[in-house]
Amino acid sequence: MITYIGSENIISPLGESATENFERVRINETGISLSKGIGVGKEDLYLSKIKSIPENNKFNVLLAKCLDSIISDSSANLINLKETIVIVSTTKADIQENLDTPIQHSIEKLKKDYNLQNTPLVISNACISGVLAMNTAHNYIQANIYKHAFVIGADVISDFVLFGFQSLYAVSNEPCQPFDKERKGITLGEGAAGVLISSDSSAFKKGPLEFVEGTSSNDANHISGPSRTGEGLYRSIQKTLELANIPSADIDFISAHGTGTLFNDEMESIAFERLNMNNIPLNSLKGYFGHTLGAAGLIETAISMQSIRNNTLVQSLGFQNEGTSGGINILTENLNKEVNTILKTASGFGGCNASAIIREI
Amino acid sequence: MNYINSYCHISNSAIKINGTISNSYEAMPIDEVIKAIYLSLDLKYSKFHKMDQLSKIAFLGIELMKQANPEISKYGENDIALLFSNSKSSAATDIKFQESYANGGIPSPSLFVYTLPNILIGEIAIRNKWYGENMFTVSNLFDAKYYAEYANILIKKSAEAVLGGWINVNEDKIEAFFFFVTKKDLKQLNLPLNTETLDKIYKGV
Image (cartoon, rainbow over all chains, first blue to last red; front, side):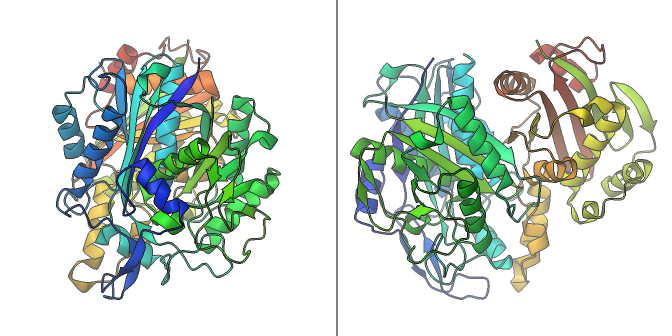
């Protein structure tokens, strides 16, 4: 049985649909800009911040916009069915407004507002949450437990998260430069994205792609530093390729995690080199969207799906000079070529790693 | 068909293995419970002491499970999937981290790294060198249907076994439950993995 994926959407500073976001990314425009006096020591810092949506209730607004967009891009009323599940990916939800009961209110609200038959499943697994949420949807569909999954992910910028990353000296004082020699850390972003994953190809208004396979793996090494051998990422990609029964040579493009920290990007380069995937064109989209945590995997997948639909790979913004010991083929300019099969990867705190393969039908 | 091979409850006043009390005491505060279990297991694991309460309890729960069922330690490094949930994510540590920088204080990096609930999966993976699947979900109540369905999915797909856990620390109350699922009924507990059985043993009825 094929798992179909489509109806992708993105809400970011670059726009409120996948096509709008892709058009802006295609001309290498970034959502990152300087915010005055926002750091823990009131310093100016770069953020990818959505200014068109009010701060109050922003997380819930983002989730609702994502669901509305999938609903309008699906061919029938699927959201209220017994065989439909909503899967929500987030790391910190509305923490600025709800410190002691995060997520719960938002989920109850979704269930009520959309008259859902099943309680949404909330995945909170650091920065791999978005990819894990798609993998979970695929697994449910293959097991015949649900027929349709509305997968949505969102995170918003808060003092909590910004100060936290600053306390780890992980925030760049310039827009982030994933994989570059001069990279200095992350740029925090906010946003949301969603996809419909279904066993039924006619569920989509516009032609879907195939979600082939996805897995996760732990580094079993350190809770806040990535493995020096890229162990978990290596194992997850290997397992995904194996279950998908796809040789690595068939991958046309890698949408990497590429946060812009020294250790993360180095780790990824080592994992890709160990897998002999050095020559496959690769990018990180963090230079356009910043690091959007629980939304990142979904935003980057949605852009990669647009790359398949448009046969255009986009430049890895912020990268100029090679700065990792594993050799990788980073896109220094947009590339028009036939794109059939893509690999999406993600890594996060807690030593977690995930990967997924999507291809054209 | 997959089977629950062992399970464990931790509360403020007792440890139960496979439904039977293995240790009971006057109800104690969380840190006292943690200390008592750590000492009883005779562990020498320096990383333990920097963990937050949620990770400590998850870590100790898995150590108790391994002691009660040595089969767990015989599985290969890619074989065991870790499937954990709770109702409040990392709220207890989130509050402490927020307090560290409120009123102009310096945000604490050692607290910040524990403000993600899946960190406890990382601690268990590091301790045991387990490279398998990871998943942390947040739900209001213990969702036996989710655990049973998803553990069965993971075993059918790629895992040989699943370690599940539900861990909440609320104010000074611990609620923790762990279970181990494999393809065979190794311990002859006669507990096939399904929603009803899992719910029953979780509730201890």
